Length: 109
Image: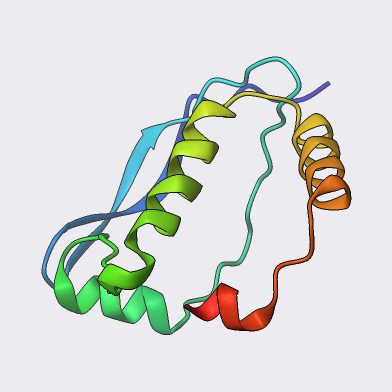
């Protein structure tokens, strides 16, 4: 029988170069989810950047030429949020299969 645990250890970022190891509540598990115990965690270059900056933000430069395409992608994602990924994939494949070919010159125009 599993042992019930109420708290876990977490590295919490408070600001620039300020990470503290704390006990935090174990997150509640919803339907279809599972809780996994992590015994070892490694860092990557992104972790170091977040530690140095003090925040976990993302900024992507985009050219005005492609701005509408980026907006369309995020609107698509937001409108499909919560949908079954299989149905989204099927819809996209069906759309691609029935659309006309887009020449490379038009794609980069």
